[in-house]
Amino acid sequence: MSDVASRELRNSTRSLLDRVEAGETLTITVDGRPTAVLAPIGRRPRWVTRDEFVSNVLTFQADPALTADLDELAGEMTDELPLS
Image 1 (cartoon, rainbow, N blue to C red):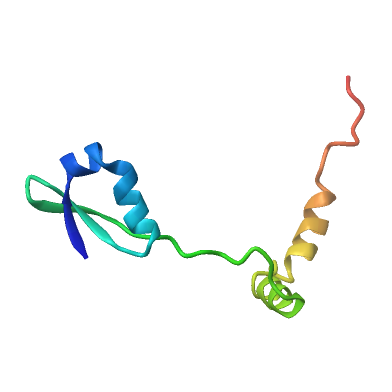
Image 2 (image 1 turned 90 degrees about the vertical axis):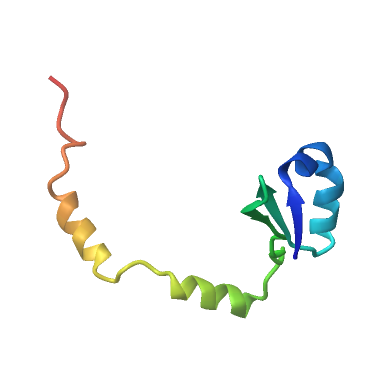
């Protein structure tokens, strides 16, 4: 990890971003103090297999009791009341 002064970040932003894109992690310093880390982000796959998709979706499904709660609340809705 290389240290980069905030002035260099301001003056050479594009070249520093190219370094980060190539996989380098940079520590940005202000008055010699580490202030931030500029690191490459992980690349997300554009396509996933069906099995991966299904396992990811099943992991984050809504609470099974949600349907019952929504049905109970639906009886209390006033959307169908006529306007005065």
